[in-house]
Length: 321
Figure 1 (cartoon, rainbow, N blue to C red):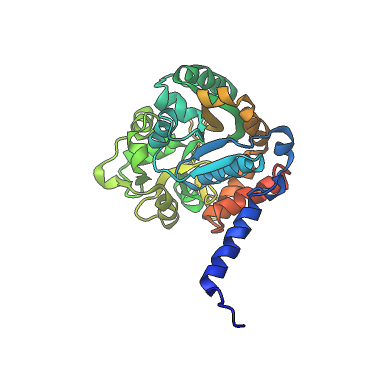
Figure 2: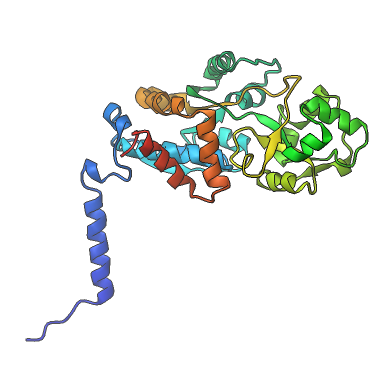
C-alpha cells in the first residue's frame, strides 16, 4: 500500500512548533539561564517592559536588565534604543515602560528642575531619590561610575594648545582662534544642564561658524579628525575616548553635575513587586568607571553586539548562568 507523504513544509512547521513547546517547559529552559540573582528573586509569571536611551552605554544597561529579568523567570519586553532622554522618561511616567536606567544629574536638572549644584554624588543621589517620589518614580541603587558630560579634544591638540580646563577653552575662544570650534548634539543645545548653561558659566560666546550640531555618535570621530570641530561634547565613560586618543577638559568651575546611573521604575510597579529592588542592589555595585568604560569600548570601538557584551559581563559576575 502506498501512503501519502506529508509535504516537507508541513513537517518542518510541526517540528518547529514542537521545539518551541519544549523550549517553554521547565525552569532550566528560560531564555536566560539562572544565576545568583535567580536564587534570590523569582519573577515567574511577571511581565516587565524595559526601556533605554539610544547610545551604547544605555543599550548595554538595558540589555543587562532584560537578561537579569529573564534569568528570574520574568517575561521582559525590550524597548531599548529610544531616542531622547525626555522621550524615555515620558514613556516611564505614562506607563509605556516599567523601568529604565537614568542619571542623577539629568533627573536633578531636567526632570526635577533644580538649579542648585550638588557636587557630592551620594548627596545628589539621595536628593534625587527623595524628590522623585512625588513623581511616582523609584530609584534603585546607584552605580559607582559617573558618566558626566565633558568637553573632549584630541590629546595631542590639547598639549599643543596648552589647554587643560574648560576655562582654557574659554580663553582660546576669546582670542578668536580658528581652532576654537565646538561640536554638540541637538539634545545638548536644549537641555537645562546643557550648552547654554555651560556657555554662561564660562562666559563663552560662540559664533554660528564655531558651533556644529550633529548626532552624538558622530562627534567623537569629528574631534579625532579635528574636522569640523576641535572640541566637542562627550560622555566621560564613553568607550571611544581611549582608542581615539582623546582627552577631557577639567570642569574647573564645576558646571557639570555627577551623573551616576541607577535603575528607575514606576512606583506602582515596585509596589506590586518590591523585590525588584534586588536588580539594582546586585548589579549596580559591579559597574565601576573602568568596568563601564571597557563595556562601552567593546560596543563603540570593538563593534560587538550590546546584548552579547551585557550577557558576557553578567555571566562573569555569576548573576546569570
